[in-house]
Amino acid sequence: MSTHMLVMQEVGTPDQDLLQLLEAEGYQADTTGLQEALSRLCMRPPDLAILSVRHLGRNTQSLCQKLCRQARSLMLPFVLLIESCYERGLPRGCDACLVRPLPSWQIAAVIKILLQNNGVQILAAGGVRLHLGTHRVYRCDSSHHLSPREFRLLETLMRHPARVLTRRFLMREVWDTDFVQDTRTLDVHIHWLRRKMEPNPSGPLYLRTVRGVGYDFVPVWPEL
Image 1 (cartoon, rainbow, N blue to C red):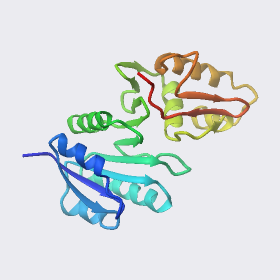
Image 2 (cartoon, rainbow, N blue to C red; image 1 turned 120 degrees about the vertical axis):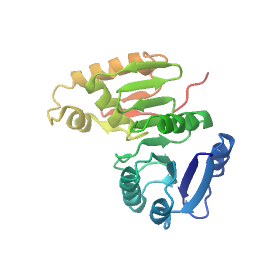
Image 3 (cartoon, one colour; image 1 turned 180 degrees about the horizontal axis):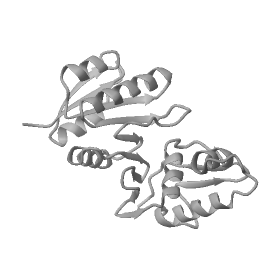
């Protein structure tokens, strides 16, 4: 019996690329609009549910949270596939948050991981994949374990892709302090992260310094 997927998407904007990918991987994929998403999820629980939207505004943010809770109660993986995120960042609770553009093999790999490992949570953007449970970061064929502060810093940046986060914001989120007179510890942790995940740490591709402001995570793919 083939694995059953439920793709929840905006009416009039079918995600044909995703549906073709799921079919090519041998999955059975059903679709539903956002208004019927919650009832459809409960009516016939799939093996994995995917919410595919272009933007995450206030309404879709609320729907996403409800779907996350329902999927958790049904003990099935829930994936958010998005092109740009709500100003507050990617929501928590999803088993995977995938920020486009992503190659099809990356999406397929995340789905396979979720189906094989119940309880795994993943953030994926650009060429970087962060496993929330194991605190490991993956890029291409390499992986590294992160310290608690490194992990929290990278998670915060990846939940706000392509947004400049100020030093004050990062110090508050990661170190739980509003003291910003000395942020060298932030710079040191960024340096350590670059050594673990950048193709060229001295010319960072993902973790960009915005002088006088802070840092941002750039969800790009390196040229191979």
